[in-house]
Image (cartoon, rainbow, N blue to C red):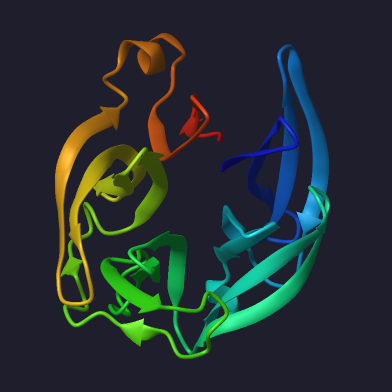
Length: 238
């Protein structure tokens, strides 16, 4: 995920440790000719990933995937970008992945992916919660939950904002291959009683750029101030 602070651009990502078998969060400052890495800016004893980062008033917050803790939580930056503190658990007792949080029409909205099928390794239900207070412990379930259930479009893969337009990015799993392609879905309607989205475009390994670089899979996309970032697989490596 990308974020700008003090006229500088930063990238936050999962930094997976294969020896410990857990993900940690690292950051990179983006320069014209390279990157500066801040390793393990957020690490716990259990797995963290999908560092959804956003601004609230004058604070920079992060809502990483913390499904291994069976909750959804928020961290606050104390010395950006490399120091963070635990701020609040907003939902407990939930096996959630790839959380997206944003503010619209006087409410904070949380879109997350839930695994309700014990025989599946993938989070295949989309759930929405909302609250007037970002740090509330009582987020309200959307009346349509689960919004939908389909392995090919349920798991979040990023979020784009273009002026007043909102786009939810979704991962798509084809033949059980993680990262087959992603969809950009335009959010058409969002309120306490209704949610509707429509496919805007598809981004997959048929694109010439990906083929030219021998990339065989993709499962995330994000944008900030005109800069795009995505991850991809090359020969079974991320």
